[in-house]
Length: 115
Length: 114
Image (cartoon, rainbow over all chains, first blue to last red; front, side, top):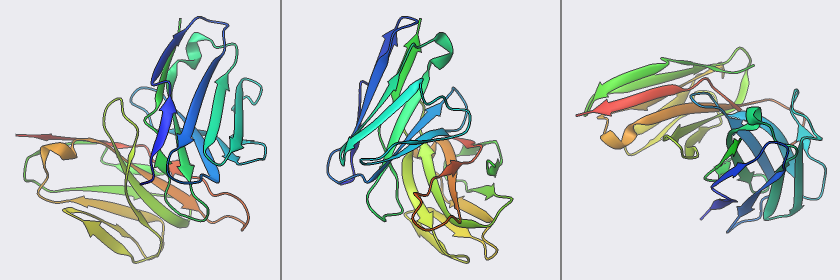
């Protein structure tokens, strides 16, 4: 149980375009989803927290207008990187938490390369 | 503030033991431990909620000290499959009704060799 999927696994896009990443909880209802970014050989840095049906809470330094998060249902959250630039190239990972559960379950991640 | 892990990296021979520490400057509500292999997402290992708690499965265990500012992960009789980067994720005390979030530590790279 507790499986989280991400799509796509990797994406290469041109500078200036937008990219959407999907995060789905397959066998549980994710009341809270988290989006992280990880640069090579570094730790995971939380970008934003989203609760189903409400606006995402962004961490300090993360641009809301650039990283659009939508948590439209209890099983799906999307992250859209708008007007992507090479410095946005990174490993983006989502995680999901069910209700009051303490555990966070991570998706397999999406590697974004902006050329 | 990001928790500090030590050591930053360790190389073990198969069968040897290792200890990874995670220290916070603030009292913590909980500590989560994850292992991440290269190019993959972190995999949940365990969570500790109470000061003084210790738990484990297989040959991996962890403790959460009484003052709730430090946690240690113990790997005994290491196997090749233990190789990866270990992260602690910490939660601080927050107001009720607010979704809690994890702050990940600096990471410890573990390599197990034959």
